Image (cartoon, rainbow, N blue to C red):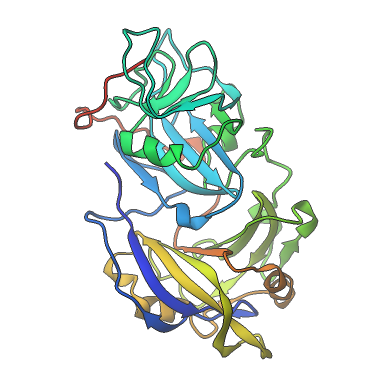
Length: 364
């Protein structure tokens, strides 16, 4: 089961200067999936066995890294340093614990059969070790139940297979092997996407940025995909490039009453309005491509009221630094959720009494 998300084809002029303008210019039909949408939370992720969240539009490009939290029984997917998906999993049971550490994907096969457990199917297998540890679709009872592999929902395993590659980094963590920021990860990748090393020390902490202040360090990642994440709850904007944080700013918002998470992608060309920060600079053109967790309140009027015409005030120096590096395809994520790190006390692993419907046989 997946929590559905509402896909949008809404055009907006979003000026990134001292303010962000979200004036709606046009709207296309909005295809929707059935079911209630749920945002990607940070303070706690509560998913029932077999459920997952998937929002790849948040970061369509950039390095991918997976972090598997054994205490949470969750797999977190990060692209360009931003979490684009999270899924319930079932890892190794007592006596067959899934090993912790930093791994690389050694082999990928859509169709694979176990040579250890009665030739059982292991759909969408991604091998982590040559002695039998792999990611694959399987039964998820809501607790560790495998012989060491990481079982995933079938649909999620298909989606994940499409964004990974051989050689990509996978980190398996618990409280003993890693710091809390890794074993209980949040919105941003807690590890380096290549080495899998703890990323602490390469990111500005929330307490280090006061009102009206910002950090800007583009030399940390001179090239690559750009993703900006604006938290209305935290009043902060974080800029990620090539999976590395290069900037963070304290912002002032007119209203935090925009529920859910909304994704915009920068288009070619210029808007018809001028930038509210500089009358000589045209506004940028953004397309809203995805929305999750907002319900009916996340319509054009709500977005306009929350973001439009100076609804988000940025430090002028930060705005001047960011706008020149924006390129078509850059994304802005606006969320009502906190993007602060997680704490173990806030997290709950839910267990289901019933297995997901029609899971594939297990190969572990």
